[in-house]
Image (cartoon, rainbow, N blue to C red):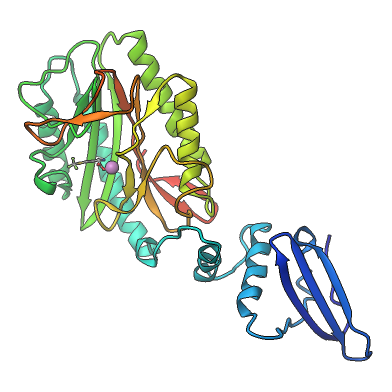
Length: 346
Ligand code: MF3
Ligand code: CO
């Protein structure tokens, strides 16, 4: 329904609740004032006849609320992003700081970093073989990245000794490449590549199924792929991180698997790891608001058995499943846009 304001006068409009609008009208010509109460779902003012709304007191914020709620019904309307974020903050939601929203110029630079990161993963895919050591994967990553003007982000990151993470079978993540670790027939391995190009960061990982993989490993990798796909589909501007988590966690559990809770994804782009922390077990509608310009990773770790883990005592990095069950992970880096979510690392 379209609401017209055909008469000259002052209109005061406010929300009685999220769902109910109060409209007061003081016509210029007549003495009688009008009061309307109607549902917000009716609020769809025709722009041509839209009057200048005036406000009784300091109700500017209310006006913004009205515009914002209106906009949620009409994708694409131009309400300044800061005001819209503020509205969500006023409702008690977790909102991103300005610092983690990327500018168009930054996005272009980060996109180049992500393109190189994808090319590194393609190079690994081309060369990965049974019988090869994980140190050889590290060499491929180091050589290809530096030859293309990049720096492998993991190298020396908080003391990490190599250029890439290689995590096999029961290793959840952060496996350190080693010349004594050989890829064997039937292994599943996650190769996690992160790149710095001209100071901008990117991050993505793939699963590789080596040779004759067991039915159980095959199924875990397939379900992990499905989880990430469903997580991506659940990611919408002005939705929440919890929407992604819920889609992932629900599908993993429906298949008898668990999602690692205490290790998650992260904001990325200007730094390797930025805000927010991205959980994959939180409920729908919870966690940080998804605002255009945000960039973060979707990288759930899906376990066959328990979600619990322990960290290698000797190297302080490699994370293993507590019950020795298999674990799989796929990582994409995404950009939230006005009209959806773009994967920057294919
Ligand atoms: N994608 C992984 C992460 O964000 C990459 C870790 S690299 C390491 O945690 F150096 F931190 F191990
Ligand atoms: Co990451």
